[in-house]
Length: 386
View 1 (cartoon, rainbow, N blue to C red):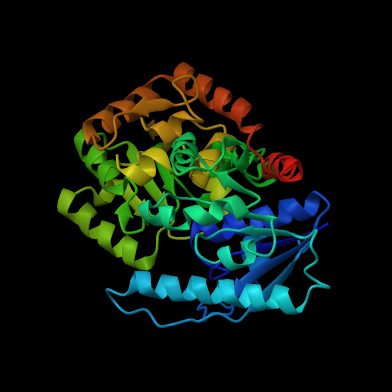
View 2: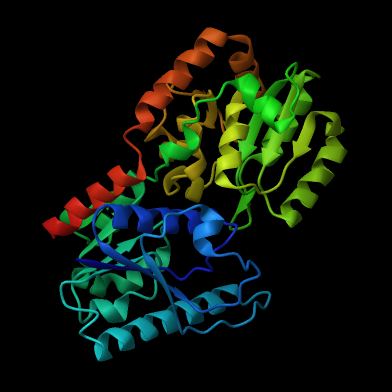
């Protein structure tokens, strides 16, 4: 059985969605499918081979196809996105129409964007879409929903929203994101990890990983820095692993304004295997997402599952999307947008070893339900039922 995974994405990319796409294709291929990842031919400052960049097995093909690649113009970002997606959708439609031998009727087309699948859905009912957000304009496609094979969503709220648009419940699968345990379940102690990274053994180290902003929205870095200022504990060292150069420059200015530079270290982007070592070096892992619609109801952050696999205690915001995976039994839940609550959560985690170990163990037990292979199995069971 062939599966064509279509993503309007620049791959490789420093953003998390690139890793998610590549891991899904790898897992689909592990499941026994003949997989081809189809991406637009776009300019990419990252010249490294995608498989090497992400450390992915070469068990599927990557095909670049024509799509418009207009330059970014400030204020026209949405127009650019429309042009990219529509041209990619048209390109795929024509390829399928004029090459039925390759793109046979029993092929599965799996999309990860909201504009390009619709033409193809008109001629092939085995079109599935994985949505990572919900937009009010989705109602414009309402008349095309019956043509889809199904939808793969990340959260319960997203499912409710699509049902309210008239999508049948039988056409929806909730599938949160996942993790590769072979990478993040390292058999290494905290001390060994710190020695490897040349980090101090005497400090209490708290870590945040990943991008600092999504769609221009802060992901909690500001609250972390303010919580460090409030804690007034010089034995705490905060390490931010990730972020673009622009993001790091921005938050370094915040650090200077708060006068906490001695307690903060920005590492920048690192490969997955090195990221796993940083997480093992931590006394606590942080994800204090702010309260807004996207974070509260539609996200399924990769870092959450990577944190759970590390056997280190997690401090997380009290948001419905987070509550679908974590609880007080597997994390320390804090009030979002509240640096004082975060500071108290950090203090609680660092001062109560019994609690820290207990929630870390529970999160690790839970993570076995969230591997890429299990996610793909659930999705394939859903696809076969349609």
